Length: 280
Image 1 (cartoon, helix red, strand yellow):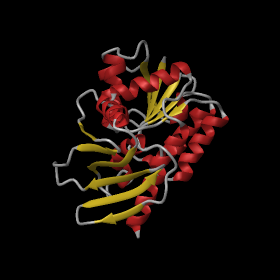
Image 2 (image 1 turned 90 degrees about the vertical axis):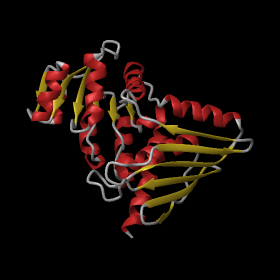
Image 3 (image 1 turned 180 degrees about the horizontal axis):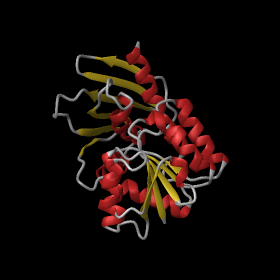
Image 4 (image 1 turned 120 degrees about the vertical axis):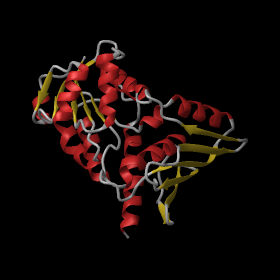
């Protein structure tokens, strides 16, 4: 399988290239082309991973690849960069977040449906073994009553503000609390944004804590169920993107998205309401 990547500034791309091209962990899949031109960054990735081609525009990947990863840090670019490949029927992974507006997210999902192109997007934390273990433990305690997810995020960050890191705890929380999403209430203190909503019958609480220099809180999730409490610190090791990459490759080979399309939209809606509240 020939993989192309659009948007190469993220450190996630280093892991994708390392896992697929250096470690050969993709079962024959490899990154064969990057878009964005012969920048210093792309030339470094090409040399490290033996990537065959670097093209200027994303559309130049068409005909060169069998599947595409859209990895721009700023989710505001994702709609424009994903649509040409979905319209060509190619499997697409949109790295987190899917988009920065519900309108863009809905347009991406609509294109996937219209052109029968497999699409997925998620925070890598959603698919960590620790998150799987937390979900299993919580389910054993009965129906979830409250889900609390916490992590660092900067509402004024340069890559879409709260969307860039906020997607991690939000996506984990909504995995643990399925169902229709109600209105999101947002409160801000000096260093923390707390957003709450009902998802199905579960109260969801997300704490987004402003990093202080190089220091930031770890990602953490807790489920209060009818018969017990389950919690985990969600630690990111050097290979934390591997489960997310494996899920994408499975989708590309089978055509079956690992996350229902409605669940691609809920985190974007949650974060859009947070961002709107912070703008006042």
